[in-house]
Structure formats: structure tokens, C-alpha cells
Amino acid sequence: MKERIYLINLYDIYGTLLDEKKQKFFEYYYFDNLSLKEISENLDISRNGVHKHLKNIEAKLKFYESKLNFYEKKIKLNKIISDIKDENIKRKLEKISW
Image 1: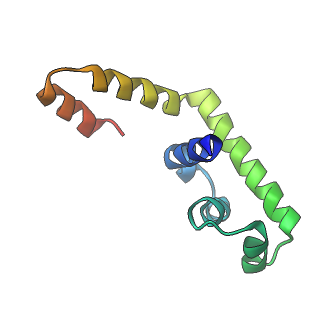
Image 2: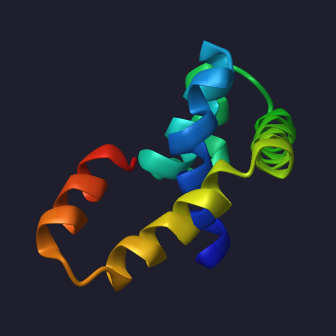
């Protein structure tokens, strides 16, 4: 479950870097909760092909994170914001953080 949440977070950050076809595969599987079989039927591709596409997409998202570290920075920034005592400053920072 942790891996799934992690990948969804990466997709939220880097998803627009993927082409539309890759976005569709990811969204069918992770957001619409379709099985590999259901996706294969919808897209007229083999179940194994769907699996390969998803693994490739997951690797690509992890690659982007390994180079850019936006997710890691987001986690650190949220921790810093949560430790701030001044509510006014906290709200302002929360508005500009993603």
C-alpha cells in the first residue's frame, strides 16, 4: 500500500511529463482500480503488455524523482511548515507549497 501511495504522489508531481497513453494506463490502474485484464480489454492489448507498460511508467516516475527530488523536497517542506508556530506564516506557506 505504501508503494501505491508513493507512486500516486509521484504521478501527481511528474504525470504531465508522461505522454497521454502512459497517463491513461496509470490512471486506469491506480485511480480507476481496473485490473490488468480490464485494461487489456479496454485498450485491446495483452495483459502482459499492460503489465510491462505499468512497470515502465513506474520506473520512469521513480527516475524523475531520483533526478529532481521534488517529492522528497515536498515532504521536507511540509515537515518544516507543520513545525511553524505562527499560524499566519504557516497558512501563507501552505498556500504556496504544492
